[in-house]
Image (cartoon, rainbow, N blue to C red; front, top):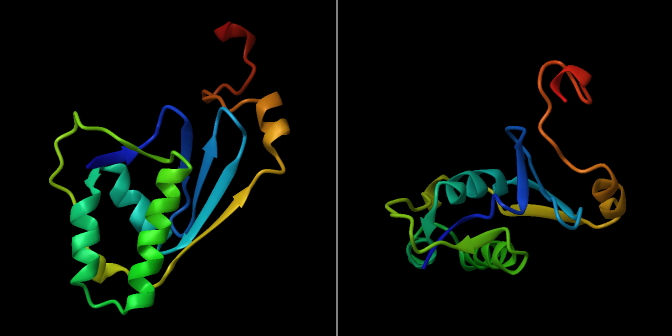
Length: 134
């Protein structure tokens, strides 16, 4: 099963040690920290999840870390952050040995109405709204 980040629904902002994913349809957003940004960056390239799970099972991690990584990826699938994409050619996997902490995330639903009211949009250097662009 080949998966990648659902860019049609989620806007991703990468702040080095934290990633924020916003569902542009519902306004629900997630903050990802610890090892989650590393995992998300690798998943955004497209990845074969069965290979990832195999690699986790043979990595240096104890059973609790393996379960936490698997659970994190399963949550990404449940939230439709990761979507199956059979058309992409995958050679990528996650180097599980480079994961030094458990993935952490928080889900926020409290700003959904506000985010839907003022949707996410790309802004040029001229700012928004810019009457000269309209």
